[in-house]
Image 1 (spheres, rainbow, N blue to C red):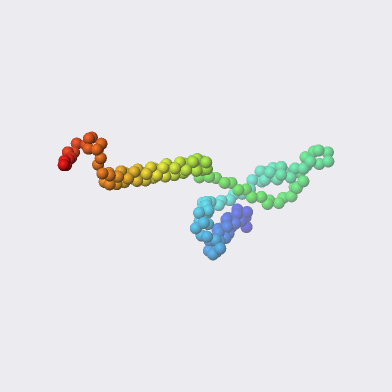
Image 2 (cartoon, rainbow, N blue to C red; image 1 turned 90 degrees about the vertical axis):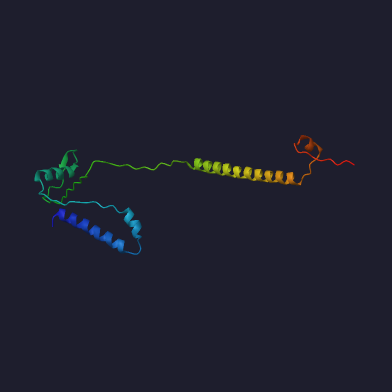
Length: 161
């Protein structure tokens, strides 16, 4: 089995494990689906470039000897190397960031200001209604006196005698 096939099987095994987790009653399926990201993939393989492989292996196994010279320590012919190349479908990158439109202090100040404003309006309106009712009751109950008669346009009959 080639390394590429092993990678493809690992991806498929991951899909099976994810579906097993979804079926479990311990995990909230809605929460898992919101966190899940699906990527499409294509698996391909090619023959290893022997010269490139030797160069990479030589570079990875370089070690300084006692005299300070570089030596290749592992010269076996093992070809245990996997190359993975990731290509994106687009170069577009989105960066989302959340910025608080209100700081905590501004939010509390706005709520307090609005509450004070509306409670003040309510108190003023309540006092005005009481004052209006007081004026109406006072006008109805109060008897007209001489000063009211002089300033009033009403004609009053005086009894003499």
